[in-house]
Amino acid sequence: MNNLLIHIIRLIVFVLAQGLIFGQLEFGVGIHPMIYPLFILLLPFDISPILLIVMAFITGISVDFFMNTFGLHASAAVLVAYIRPELFRLFAPRDGYDVLKEPTASEYGYKWFLSVAGIAITIHHAWFFLLEHFSWSDWLIILRKTVLSVIVTMFILLIIQILFFKKPKTI
Amino acid sequence: MRNLIAFFRRFRVFLIFVLLQLIALTSYFSVVSYPRTKFFNSANNVTGTLLSWEREVTKYLFLDRENRKLQAENAELSKKELINYIPVDPKTTIINDTIRELTIEKIPATVINSSYSHKNNYFTINAGRLKGVERKMGVVSSEGVVGIVYDVSEHYAIVQSILTSTINISAYVGESNAYGLIKYIENDPRRVTLTGVSNDIKIKKHSKVFATGKGGYFPHGSLIGKVEKLNPIEGEPRWDIIVRLEQDMRRLHYVYVIKNFLKPELEELEKNVDQLE
Image 1 (cartoon, helix red, strand yellow):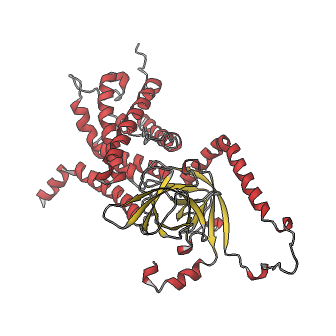
Image 2 (cartoon, chains in turn green, purple):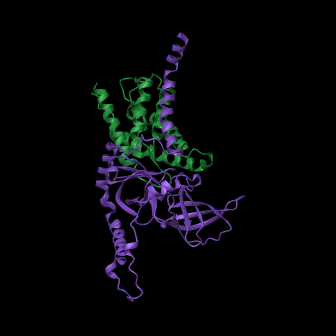
Image 3 (cartoon, chains in turn red, yellow):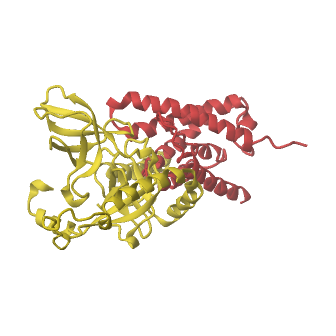
């Protein structure tokens, strides 16, 4: 149950960070970092897929409440949760995942984190901006927004991983 | 029956996924296409309060610039004060106060949450139903038109910014009086497009663009921006007029909601004519 509490606190922190800090920063040129997908990636390995999707939906609508996007973030977050099990299977280490460990960079290496988070964030951002514009004639803007935002988001996620998810000292 | 249950068990993750996607996307697209949905936005108390706290912290960052603007506005107003005028010639001066009627009231508000980089942008202000804000009221800043109220709660309101593809504010070009609709096409937070102006009308660059009083949103002649570029549309006898907004939407902090006392009368009158609405 202690675990559950940690994830609820994390949910609140990620939503507040997105709504009050990263969502309010306006970089211009289409950069729009979205960090909350990291929360979905950080949920435990043995969570049931349905609970995972529902948690993602809750995260998404909470962000929607802040950003006045009326469900756009919820849609993108649910997509990330849906592809997460497949994505983790794709990049599984040779001897599988240890369900007691957390899916962080310090546990499974930065190469693993960069590939998993990179793909998840790219799909999330591309889906988000595609739905936001919803017209093929804007493809250049969608592409520019996606590429620039993914780069900035990944940079922020790396900093979060380095600062807050250090490897626990083993005795 | 057993097959059906087996089907649901097998695809339950996918079905939940589709269900939640449908909820989210219905909400999003019903807002974008026609204003109806009322959930998933920041006009509720929890997010509204949190965003107000954030503003309390950050508001000091731009106080200086806003003060200067306020000072300029005050100076402009004091020019109009009666005490500063002297009658030039008592025989020709007309005192016309009694034949004028107040038609609008401005409700001051502060922007607590805004965006300008999306295709459709909305912002939240800290005035709601208790201060007399209602849906479909116009919102202006000291420099120009900025949007129309989209949704209201007790203490907050969501404003559909002029940077929204469905905003369709009716506007005219000052010198030539050509009418058209303001749309947000360019994806550039400083520029909007005035569409529907026939290309046999001569339009000068840098002439001012004003809102018409249509729908009672804004007083007739509220400034929107200046004509920056004229593009002929291929195959259509129309201009595509790029208008540079007077108000930089990236620096919007203080706004006024316009309460039009005559709006019910206007709506009552126009109700029976289909072409007007």
